[in-house]
Amino acid sequence: MSQQVTAIVLAAGAGTRMRSRRAKVLHEIAGRPMLGHALDAVRGAGIDHVVAVVGHDREQVEAAVSALDPSATIAVQTEQLGTGDAVRVALDAAESTSETYLVTYADVPLLAADTLRLLIDEHRAERRAVTILSSEPEDPTGYGRILRDASGAVTAIREHKDATEDERATREVNSGILVVDGAFLDRAVRALSTDNAQAELYLTDIVGQAVSEGLPVGAHVLEDVWQTEGVNDRRQLVRLGRELNRRTVDHWLAEGVTIVDPETTWIDSAVTIGRDTTILPGTQLLGASTIGEGVTIGPDTTLRNVEVGDDATIVRTHGQDTVVGPGATVGPFAYLRPGNRIGERAKVGTYVELKNTTLGAGTKVPHLSYIGDAEVGEGTNLGAGAITANYDGVNKHRTTIGSHVKTGCHNVFVAPVTLGDGAHTGAGAVVREDVAPGALAVPASGQRTIEGWVASRRPGTPSAHAADQSTQENSGGQHQEPQ
Ligand code: UD1
Ligand code: CA
Image (cartoon, rainbow, N blue to C red):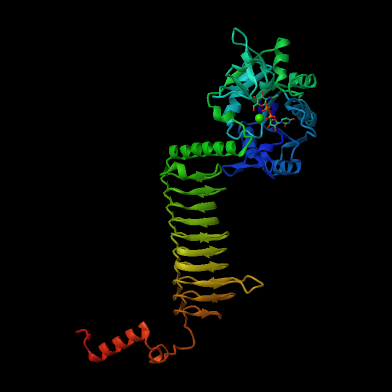
């Protein structure tokens, strides 16, 4: 049955009040352009045929439609003569007339697939020519009003600018979302006139037309007003974004995720989270991030397109395009740049930056390190202050470190370089040449100590004084420890 419904998504309007270089319908909430939310709702309702009507910012919007929903048909409305004209353009772009049409807007981002499904089902069950999705907002100013007769039957939609004082007192308004019989729509949009306050071709005039032809018309009043709200400016965008986030947080709470502070937690709509995961305040889970079960994330963590395995812990971290293995620990204060695979139970510690790096199971980079373009085996420990010198100013090179390697503090790995399995390095090593499995690499030049340098070059300083004091005490033998 669903093959016989075509959705017409109107996206040709100007969006001047956004004051933006970007087309209005491409502004995002929950990590997805409003246009994407509208297309998701339509697809989620099981509708196979979609026509998107584009006009203003045509190139941007057309490219976005193709990217978000490659099988959608694009219809170009060259002049914005009104919603009736936009629908006519959509019908002309389609190859044949569909049995039923759903008309919806690209700037109504909270509209749910279930609502569209319900509207289509009701339309069919009641065998109507037109079914309107209506609502009763606090302030109906600006909307088209649903006019009903004494029996409660819908008689027309009257646009605000054309309405009388009495008609304006009506609370019930047109959301703009309609389900219409195909044959009737095709006929009705071609008969519209511009004889109205805005000299536009109003799609809403088809309602009065159907009634005058004696065709059945009805309106479904949606309690959830948020779903019918459109976005015209950034205030509305942010307000709806906050509400969508509240709904997303609520969904994950119901699914068994503890979200300690919903107010400061932001979760994009494509993110998935497993049970018994705890999200601490100030956390943003963005893009296509997938979070396992029993994970702890936050506080103050941003993850974009990060896959987190079960029971991992991520504290005060900024991460992107990275896979974190089960039971791994990250942070506090870690920076995960794209392309990392952090193994099971591995540790990326404090003030560690990782890029394009694979860490094997149980490998640790605990403190103050930059590891980029590296492959590290299992059970290896990189001492504090490990740095891969991966960039020679022209090219990036890889560092390969085996399993069960132990590197001393403050090492530099000058790539390309390889440390074999079980290799060790001393503190301060600058590893320029490969280290064989099981070998120890230590800095080649020994330490040069110049006795009495402070007394001769820095006389009278606190350092000189302290050194002098210490020498006297030691020679006096006062601090000899008993065996
Ligand atoms: C429209 C409805 C009104 C309803 C309101 C809900 C009409 C005549 N009026 O009014 O009853 O209460 O929506 O928000 O339909 N668009 C095009 N091409 C055009 C004109 C509009 O694609 O030529 C698109 C816009 O991009 C937008 C949608 O249609 O997504 C609605 O257009 P808009 O001008 O906002 O209609 P309203 O005057 O708000
Ligand atoms: Ca509008």
